[in-house]
Amino acid sequence: MAKKTMIIGEVRDGELRHVSFETIAAGKVVADGGEVIGVLLGEDVSGLAEQLIQYGADRVVTVTHPDLKSYTTDAYQQAVLQVIDLEQPDGILLGHTAIGKDLAPRLAMKAQAGLVSDAVAVELEDGEPVFTRPIYSGKAFERKRIKEGMLLATIRPNNIAAMEKDPARTGDVSSITAEISDLRTTIQNVVRKAAGGVDLSEAKIIVAGGRGVKSADGFKPLQELADLLGGAVGASRGACDADYCDYALQIGQTGKVVTPDLYFAIGISGAIQHLAGMSNSKVIVAINKDPEAPIFEVADYGIVGDLFEIVPLLTEELRQILV
Ligand code: FAD
Image 1 (tube, rainbow, N blue to C red):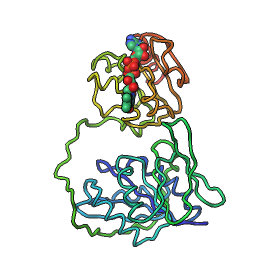
Image 2 (image 1 turned 45 degrees about the vertical axis):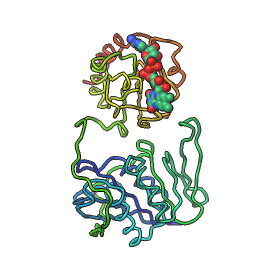
Image 3 (image 1 turned 45 degrees about the horizontal axis):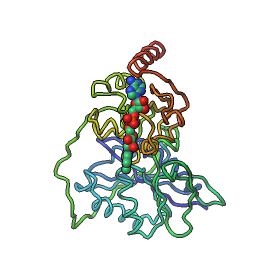
């Protein structure tokens, strides 16, 4: 049965994150022929509305207010609840990002909706959306449906393919000014630690290093390989704890969960807590001098040897092919 489905687009540094488009594709399944409404929140986001339509949204509602310039739970919650009141959707989808993970449970509680968190797939079964989500750190998958009332779901980046961009697609864009009051938190200033580079959680290719990389300098060949492939550098907690790199790069149970098309695990042993963050990557290449390292149990391709010899060779070979 056709359902009115709302997706919350995510804006960072003035641009839409790709997961917004993937969420539209999931929204199309949930809507089952019904309307997919893109919602954009910010101080001034009207310039981005058209992109949501080109990626499949039927129309877009922009919600503007100076307090929406940077994400705060309070302000975003108030603004989205206003759109829910206005649109009365049957379902709402968000990216499973830092913002989505924070906002979705609060919206679910306020709107009395059922929440499926961290979905990697959605399909219709007897006309009802059924979400697949990983459990036990990615060792198994469960399938979930919301039986009653409004449904909310967060969609893990890099799992549901976005629709092809169609520049000819058109749709209505309307704008509302949010009513926001009694904020407990306001953002005075945002200071970014690292600038530029490919976003780890949305990267299609990740080159991750572990304690085997041995120093901050040891990460340089990994960065070179990542740059050549247009990927991002990640790390194990071993490497972060040893101060070879920033904790923002940590992948795993207490770091980021990633699902790239290609994951290089270099000098990483493959502890269960690391696997929790990357074992659902589509292709895993492990480079380790220890043939017994557990990472080889999840790797699609394994290279046993010294990473300081192998990584530069690999980069050089790939450069011949790619450049
Ligand atoms: P090591 O286990 O020391 O492995 C280094 C590897 O490098 C070895 O396999 C070695 O053979 C190889 N190596 C060494 N030199 C070379 C060389 N020259 N060439 C090739 N290979 C070489 N870990 C995470 O990664 N992410 C998490 O989110 C996380 N969360 C945790 C949460 C909890 C509650 C706990 C208890 C632990 C957590 N850990 C996490 C830590 C985890 O248990 C491991 O300690 C950590 O993943 C080990 O990092 P590593 O593989 O880089 O280091």
